[in-house]
Image 1: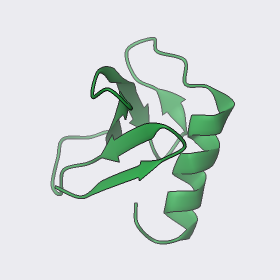
Image 2 (image 1 turned 135 degrees about the horizontal axis):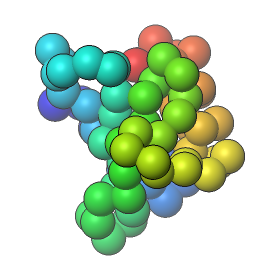
Image 3 (image 1 turned 90 degrees about the horizontal axis):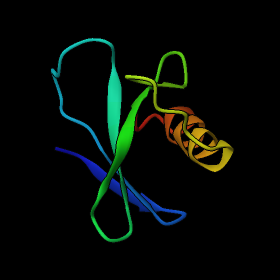
Length: 66
């Protein structure tokens, strides 16, 4: 289970997890904030991620980590 900590978020994902391809997002205190669909850069289950988080996910994708 890869994990990245940046901008006050902890992002983790599971290899071979169910679709849609997504990451689990936690705040700096370890509380679940939501799940982000990394192909569409949208929240799952009605959650709306802020721009900073979307930018972080795009950076990770561009770096080849996602």
